[in-house]
Amino acid sequence: MKIADVRTYRLSCDLSEPFAFSQWTYRRRETLLVSVRTDTGLEGWGEAYGPTPLTESAVREFLAPLVRGKDPRDTEALWRLLFARGIDYGSKGILVAGISALDIACWDIKARAAGQPLYRALGGEPVEWVPCYATGFYFGGDEPLERKFPTEAERYLAAGFRAMKMKVGLGVERDAALVRIVREAIGDQVQLMVDANHAYSPVEAVELGRRIAGLDITWFEEPVSPLDVEGYREVKRNIPIPLAGGECEYTRFGFEPLFRARALDYAQPDLCACGGLSEAMKIATLASVYQIHVTPHAWGSAVGQAAALHFYAARPSHPASLTPERKLIECDQTENPLRNNIVKTPIQFQEGKWRLPEGPGLGVEVDREAVERYLV
Ligand code: MG
Image (cartoon, rainbow, N blue to C red):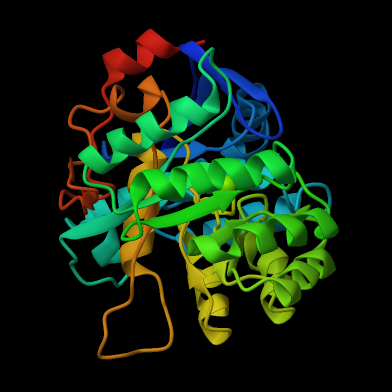
């Protein structure tokens, strides 16, 4: 089996209402899908996280010529080839996002060729339903957040979510007040996480952490700059809330120093950025040595979402226990037509849980007509 063709699809869709977080305002959603076709007619799909003019050029101009003619089932050899070829100028960022898309597509083909769902090809056992947390509570809109957030919480509760993640980063005072409002709206039986998207200095993050420590926060995500490992440690030493992070990190080489420093309690590699399935499994292996729970960041289309789910079901974890691990995977609740509209059947969701796809490969079928509709 040989790779005959690699195609890239830049997808974009304007939002009906912009929304913001601590770093910028989203006015549209965009992503890059990558299709890999073999000489036997099998096709696999992958996705790259990041600005699509850049990821497309990385895949089309630089990476695709390196994989044409190769066997897509040789995922490890292909990953090594692509990473080695780019390491001098792209060991993190866009180039690794491009590798991620190709790696996911090759795993999709490999599992389809074996007639297996991807989680099985990765060595995982079946778990029917995977509990999710709702990612929402963004900023923006005309309504004051003090009124908007409780309404939003109601919606997630009605959808069956028993865990939710809210944005912070509006200043310690305002954040603390809004976290209290959301906690009061959801009661004390629902898990609540906060995410600053690295808006704070360690001093500010500690101050916010202390103010919300009594509100039973499951984790504080990206409290400080992803470039400041010592900053993470400082925050961790000074507040009783577990820390999460890693959506801006790449490959085992990027994650290992964070693990060794014990900077994180939850590591969040994005399958479409960190190096794909091949690399995420290695990141999870390293994390298991440090007993860090890996739960992927997932913010893309149905393709990236499926990759994240299969990975989460199959990833190595440690320690073992008679009590089942408390699983929680991200379920983005913001407006994103690319999430469900580009596949023939969206991943099944019920009562705050996702059903692990059982079809071959990623278990989602990309709808070409829909892809054409969102093409840039
Ligand atoms: Mg985040």
